[in-house]
Length: 356
Ligand SMILES: [Zn+2]
Image (tube, rainbow, N blue to C red; front, side, top):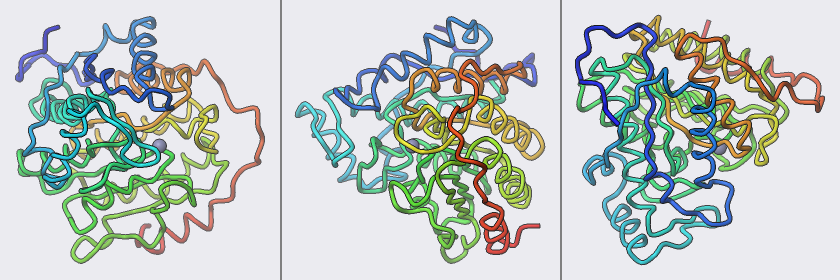
């Protein structure tokens, strides 16, 4: 498993990488929805469909404790290490870990850091870190919602410091609000956090009026959607809120918390997005990265619990990164909730954030 050298003079505009390592399967959650089989299904599908041969494998490394501590308290990190050494156990009613979870979690954060390094070093223009445990619910001092360390927050803090960046945009389209990521950058004007999520719903945060504190006011944009939203509603908020907000912020790097638990077949939530919809969202995000920051786009896996929908949606995401046509083997939802009326919500968010 070779990784391309840091400087590659012959890369194409479409070069995309993926982070994966079997170490992520060592986070053993037992009887749970967030299981190792998720990544096994994704990798098997990418291999079966020939996608992996079009991608550059980026080998992960463990994040250092100092890197994890960019976001998390050191006593919390120590606690996770000690819990793993003791064989694991439950951390909250949803979140469980095993003996291998500490190491897997270090590699999950380190995997996304490596993706950022590969992008900033010019090895690839975009990359998707296929890692677990996921991260966006983890706060500075608390494991939550299947998450131990907040991979995307750690990678963003790392990128700010290492590459002296001034503006990073995080887009989080997981069906749940990324409370941990919001917390990490709530008062930091250098990171804009935009989240679409079912609301009201777990974890309870993510209302319209959480907009950032102090000098960071306006850099936290929540898009709390009613249950039943599908491709049309998501595309509307992407086009009418996320695109103008991203253009105004003008990021130097875009990071994405990609959760596929808003797929219609997902067992945890009540959204109606299709694989095609995820492809269209990725197309918009990739378009923003190409327009605003030289294509620099790093994606990390958060949720998604129907294995077929997850694997097909991740493949569609890669297809867009590569410039391929994406396909949708699952089609549209057969349920009909009717189109959710989100126009007033969009107007309210535009008003709050003074968007055109
Ligand atoms: Zn989720």
